[in-house]
Each structure stands twice: as structure tokens, then as C-alpha cells.
Length: 628
Image (cartoon, rainbow, N blue to C red; front, top):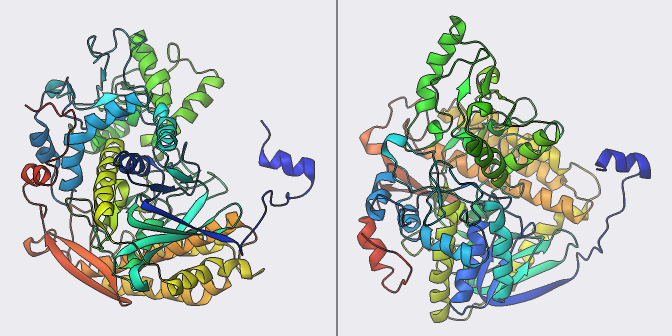
């Protein structure tokens, strides 16, 4: 394999940009439904809208065939209680999963429609069951359906709501179906801004603008309905391109673009104050996938250096069926190490597993997840054999990441039971919404949003785009390519991340947050005007930085608005130490109104009766829901 370093040594120079650059050219594309983001939610939204008869445009910053957090694959399809092996009622399961600061709307949709969505994956050609009998004898395999029930659930109270799947087959099937349905796909196009009717933020959304990140071409998209599906932001706090290549195991394109676009357009967002620890390696330590002990290693027993079993469930601390099990046991394990009861290092004991379980975990589960597929292939090429070798666990050896290395948490766009945002014509799905969940959540809500947006588009008036707003956004987009010196995107990204580490991480006070806001505003005023890009790719990276900057400011504004600490949100204010006082057990909703920050509060469980509201908004839905 030729590396970039090898290429430079051979050629002796950085190659010229391989595509024709046409910053001054452009086109306008018109449709009924515009989908921004071609990940799992975006593809499903496009497919669903197209099946409803809408003319659909799908715009993706990468290549739709593998783009998004779920593009490389997934190993579990979670919380689908209408599957034939389920032992629970879907409405009861949705209520059980919906606690404080969750998304009851999306969760109800997932529980009612997730299995329908999975079956449609299969109809498109994706693989969801062991139809070739490769894993006979594996725990959880059902002979009649050929489904593999995940062993990640508490075995003493197994409810069969999670299935193992061949998720690497999903994204190609989605793109193929989009093309079959006539969805117009614009790959390698970064959408930078939403368009409001008459160019006034807060008005109906009538489309978006963006540019091709290879040719630089400017594009205007005009649509009756727009669905935001650009997912979250795993890039805000830390940048390390030298040691690790990047700072996230999620899609490289997830840089908060949707949050920034929604904010500038005047949409409401909530839970934006939440952040969490960054559990990735960044080149300084392993990701949790790098060694046995979490995720798809769910049924691999951990042992110490002498073969002594550890009382740690490898997957439980991330699975709702065994809440906080890992975190509760970790201090006990550490104490045992210090007393000599356990010997480091720890290992995942693959050879102790039955052969069929070894194969299912190593060759199926781990190869169907995203980053773990790379790890399995790399380790296997180096000679690792699960029948012979234990796999080292790095969790206790490396400890936790520094507390200032964080990642934005549960924040997202506020939606109603139609997945419509606070703006007419604008919908959201997947991780673009507040308190989003996993792959099946994104698939089900994308599918749902597509049909709702298509229904709206059938009745909506023709959109009218403001030429002035388009011209203003075009000027903003291309400002960096008008310069040939100054600062580049890496410098700006690193500066934004460092400001967030200093002023909006573990320690939160009013004065620190305001200092952080002041620092970000100084960056915006002094350094953004110096940002330059020498090609369309670097222009994309530069505009991602501007999304990061906007997202960072939203987080700080929301943090200032929550004047209380919250264990439920992992949010602690030094100057407001009372934890979860009753009057603050509410959602803080935030929006940009005439360049001023406006906030309001919503009560817990503001979505009302989940079953009744779902059914009231979906009387025409004809899925394969089997009921109970």
C-alpha cells in the first residue's frame, strides 16, 4: 500500500489539485423535498419521501455509499420490540427507555417502526439474518427466523429487543435504493446555509445553498420541505491530525454544520449545554475498540494476567439493561489490582469461548461495526487468531481521558410529533435531533421524517428564494479562497478547541463561560477574516471551522442559561452547586432571534402520552406492526 509519505517521496512535491475548479459557476436545483446529509437518517428520509411521490434531492458532504456515522456498518440493531422474538410490548418498552432528558418522540417512533425499517433493509438487499446457517449454535440464534438475538442484554431478564446484523451491507443498499427511486444525489457537496422565505431568519425554510468540495461549484437548492440530517459534532474540543489522523471514530464530516445552519435560520435547539467525556484515543491512548473490554466484545470474558476471571460485564456499562455496571465495579477492580488480587494486564479470553462464539464475535460482530472492522482486519493480518490468542484490554492501564477532552452531548434541534422543527418547512431526523440514540433510531426517524415532509410538500405553496440571502451566503462561502495567506483551517480549529477546553469543560462558572464567549468572539472578529483556503477541500475544512465556532457559541450560551447543576446531564456549575433542583428539571430551549439569544423552558416529558400522540399523528401508517 502506498502512503501519502511514500507518494511525496516519489513525486518530490505536493500534487496539483486534480479537479477543475469553478468557483464562479453554479446551478439551481429544484425539488419537493431536500435532504441535507446522506447518512443513515438522510438516506432513509430520501427513500421514504420518494416512495410518497415527492421529487427528492439528497445532498451529502462525502460519498453516500459509505458516508455518515453508520456508513461503514453496525453490529447491533437495537430496541425493536415489534420483532417476532420480542418479549415486550413496544409502547411499554418505549416508556421504559424514556427518562429525563431523553427524546420520547424519537424513541416511540423507533420502538414502533424500527423493525419495519429493518425488514425494508432486507428487501433492499441488506443482510439481517443468518440465512446461510453460518452461525449454528451461537447463543441467541433462532432457527425459525434465522435472527441472532444479541447477548448484550441482561441474560437473567432477556427481552430480545436487540438483534445482531450485518450492518456493512446497509449503506450500499440504501444508496442503490435512492438511485432506483430517482432521488437526485449530490455527493461531495457541503451545504452551508438554509434559505428562509424573503431571506428573513425565522421564516419558512425554502431550500439551502452549498458548494462542491472538489470543484468549488456553487449550488442553490430550492424545495418546499427540507430535512436536516447532518448528525452531530465530534470534532469541537480536540484536534489531532498528526498522531491519530483525526480525533473521532465517527464520520469525519460531522462538524456541527446542521446545528449552525439551524441556528442562523432561527430554529430552536435544546440540551445544547450538554457535553460528555471524549473516550477516544487521539493517538495518546487506545480507543475502547482497540482492545477487549467494550462494544462488540460483549460476551468476551475479561481475565487478569494469571487467567483469573474479572467480575466486569464488558458491554454492560453502555447498555441500558445493566446500567452503570462497569462504572460501579471499576473502583473495586482498581482496589483489587493495588492489593494484588488481580494482575495486570487484563485480556479478553477468546480461546475460552466456544468456537462458534469466537467466530460470531470476531469475524461477524466486530467486522460489521465501523472502526472495529479496521482493527479486526489489522490484527488478523498481524497473526491474531481468536482460537489461540487472548486480546489485551487497555481500559484500566490507560485510565480516562483528560476531563477537558470533551464532545458535545445530547443537544439537537427541537422537533414535534411530525419531526418538524420550530420553522415551517424544516424537519429533522437522526442525530440532528435532541437526545438522539443509535442506528435504528436514525433509520426509523429518517424514514418517518421523509413521509411527513413529503405530505407537507404536497400541500405547501411554491417556495420563493431571496436573491439577497443567496448572494450574502455565497460571499461568506468563498471569502477564504479570495485570500492566499493568513491562517489555515487547522490553526483555527485548534484555537476553537482550546478555547472550549479552557472555558467550557469540567469547570463551569458564569465568569469562565463569559470569558469563553469573549474569546470565541475575538477569534471570529480577528482570525476568521484571515482564514484562507487554496483549494475546494481546504475551503470545506475552513467552513467546517465556522460551523464549529457557531456551535461552540451556542453551547456556551446554553450553559449560561442553565443556572443549576445536573447529575442527569453531567453538567456542574461551581457557582450554582445545587444538583437537579426541581425548578431546573426542564429543557432549556435556545434560538437566535434577530442576532439575540432567546431562551425558554419546556417541562420534562413535554411530548405528552407517547402512545396516544404517536397514533394520533400516524393514523395512515401501514407498517407490519404486529401489536400485542
